[in-house]
Image (cartoon, rainbow, N blue to C red; front, side, top):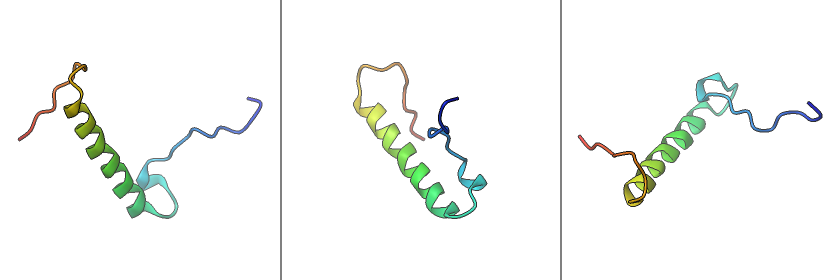
Length: 50
């Protein structure tokens, strides 16, 4: 590779610091993704609600 990779992301629990913030950011992203999917009528996945 000609340059250092800049698209690698460690799992939250593998980070050396900011673990709780990383976990919160991931959960926020996941919730927003589900909301986007629920609003998009042109996708093949179904959001199952308990």
